[in-house]
Structures are given as C-alpha cells and as structure tokens.
Image (tube, rainbow, N blue to C red; front, top):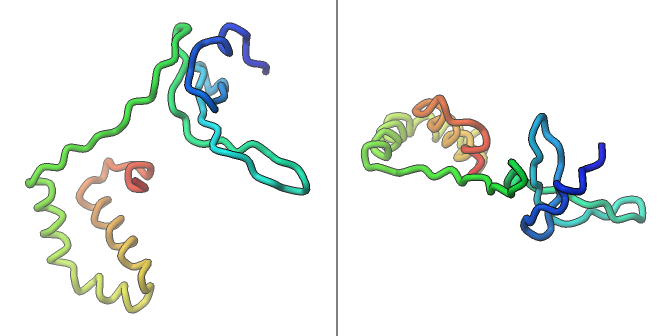
Length: 119
C-alpha cells in the first residue's frame, strides 16, 4: 500500500521513510545501502518516531536511573557467583562475560526486555 501524500508531507528528519505498522505510521531511519548482485538496496535502521495526527512524534529514549541500591544488587550477585564466571570462562572464553552479564541482568531484573539488554 502506498503512503498517502499528506503523511509523506509531514516534516520529519532527513534520511527517513514512513511505513504503516499496524494502525500507526512509523518513521524509520535509513542507515545506508547494501550492494548485492550488482545493485544497491536501501538498508533501514530502527524506528525513530511515529506520525500521529499529522505530526512527527519522536520516540522517547529509555533512561534508567542508576541508584547505589540497584548497583549493590549486581555487585552482590557478581561476588557470590565468581566461581561460575571462572567455569564459564574456561568453556566459552571471552564470550563468557557477556553470557554472565545477561544472566545476572535477567535474574535481578526479570522485566528487562532484549532491546534493553543490547544497550
């Protein structure tokens, strides 16, 4: 389905495209192009906002407030499971630190989604 003219004419950041996702218009960043089989194909990045009621609304950044109380939980978990980290390092090498960090994050904060962990 083609994007209506009134949606395309809404002012938004450069190098973006508009795509219908569900019931709303997502503004997607264009991050470059990929060369395949002798042709350039556009490469899309993340959703950076939406068009709502004829206006561009930027996506809100997730900000996490780091308090000493939260940090203490992570240090306690790390100190209590150092032996597990050593075992992981023997098996997985450098990748063990990433596995260990994700395991601790998911244990202490079960509501953390994958996109939050990737940051």
